[in-house]
Structures are given as structure tokens and as C-alpha cells.
Amino acid sequence: DIIQKNVQPNVDLLPNLTQSDAKGMFNSPQFTALLQKIKKYDVVLFDSPALLVTPDTYNLAKNVDGVIVLVQWGRTTSGDVQSTCNYLEGVVGSKLIGVVLGQVPSKKEPDYYNRKETKRWLRFIPKIN
Image 1 (cartoon, one colour):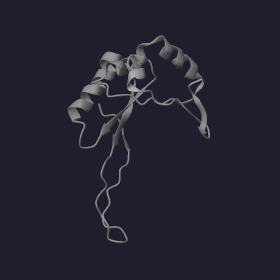
Image 2 (spheres, rainbow, N blue to C red):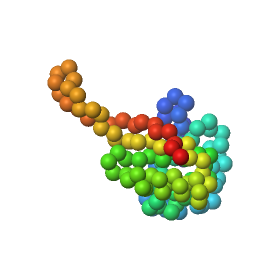
Image 3 (cartoon, rainbow, N blue to C red):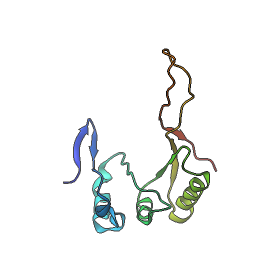
Image 4 (cartoon, rainbow, N blue to C red):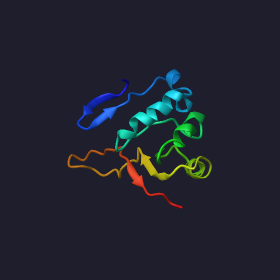
């Protein structure tokens, strides 16, 4: 069994695959079998490559209940975000749950010791039509 049980309380893990193992994975009979096997879980999260540059991700997106798009602050363009969201909903037919904006710098305010820090954090951004 490739699923590691109880890596944290109530959390099982399917380790990431190497790039050569993952090529074509989301369009394979093994992936279809895996989807059937994991239906017993309440929540399943897949971390996949970018949709616009990896055709395999399309096959994953069309086989899950919903998609959360992750975007990198200062790197991902708003046009790419809009294209991805439009593609997911219009072409793939996926339910877009929302967008997560990652690596957002915090305001650079001095702390107690007058040091400035930049925090990396994730913020859920509701879908905007």
C-alpha cells in the first residue's frame, strides 16, 4: 500500500512521486483505481504542477470535486490567474473553490527589538466573478 497511515493524528499521506513516475499519472488506470480507493476520506488534497504548463494537471482537475488555485505573490500574473480560473470552469468543468495567495510579505514594522521581518503566509482569497 502506497498510502502512509497516521503520519499525524487522523492524517494519511500519499508521498509525492518523482517527475518520471508522475508523467501521465493523472490519465492512467492506476490513478483511476487510486481515486476509487481514496473515496473513503472526508478530504483529499492533491498538490499538482501548474495547469497552464502541464497537460496532466487537466486530467487531475476533471476528476476531483473541486479545485483551489495557488498563486505566488509577485510572480503569478493576474492574467495567468484569470486564464487558469476560466479554463478550469469553462473547459474542464471543475468547481473552483477559491484562490490561495502565497508568499505575501507582511508590512515591515519594527518588532519589540526594532528588527524588521517579512513573514510568508497564505491567505484565502474568495473567488471573484
